[in-house]
Length: 344
Ligand SMILES: Cc1ncc(C[n+]2csc(CCOP(=O)(O)OP(=O)(O)O)c2C)c(N)n1
Image 1 (cartoon, rainbow, N blue to C red):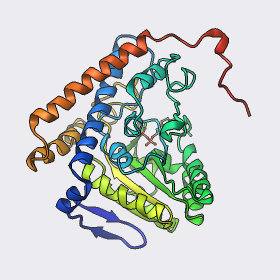
Image 2 (cartoon, helix red, strand yellow; image 1 turned 180 degrees about the vertical axis):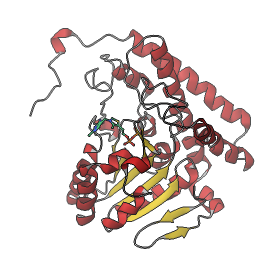
Image 3 (cartoon, helix red, strand yellow; image 1 turned 45 degrees about the vertical axis):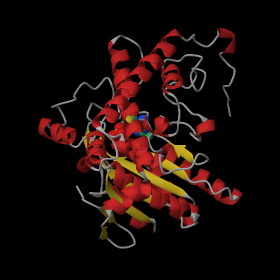
Image 4 (tube, helix red, strand yellow; image 1 turned 30 degrees about the vertical axis):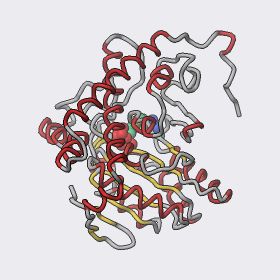
């Protein structure tokens, strides 16, 4: 784990971040917003876990433990930017301003969901710049290059943030996507959330390099390795990469080191043991990104314990109301089954 950022291309170097300056630049409101976003994402994942225990059928890959990277990255984007998300959790959706009620409704296949119940976990929301979550690992990475090219050709000034896991960096689409984005100098920020596993396989078993960001060098773009549980640091590097992309400097690959606290999906109950040593899981739980930012906010007197507790209470109430809405919502009407469905 690194204290600062490691820049891996064009040259390998440790970048030291002035934390105080960075906190000042981000500002109190932005940091509280990031804290709130992480708490809401955590509470949404926990509510889904509760609903699964009650017997509701939801496809879920929990992001508990990984909230800092998607939330702090989205906080650095503009409203008109694009997000190409992946399957792990809903922090990117919360980060884009999507609401838990319609997210949960969509996951339950209800008509009040973002895709009227027909997208399920593969949801999209164009109004939030979310272009759809693919079930094919890595497939969206090369699409992100195309979205970036489109923004560049239109001169719209938009940037694309593309999230994926370390496993997805072994797909052909990753390599094609990074190459093309670099050739086109497309405004894309590739964000790899490296949680050390792909399903039940370790990084070492499946990946030719010890750090995914090393691959940036092969495509002539800047790469960063960052502690993905440090929201302030992620926000710093995301802001830099987004500013560079918007200014025409082309794409960046950010590798955020993080960890999922639970199994791969809700079906994988191996929260401990099995393919993951208990000590390792416990160690990463100690590095909770929410506790970490909360600690800094109170230490710097940017927030009180009571204020932070209030954020948790409000988030739990919000998720309870969201679940209620989703449960009580109707399924799509039978006569609408083919509406909004496109075949090419
Ligand atoms: C092309 C493809 N291969 C395999 C799968 C099955 N699969 C779903 S998630 C997953 C693991 C992905 O790991 P990673 O990219 O590291 O993300 P993480 O789940 O760790 O967040 C796999 C192999 C798939 N959906 N698509």
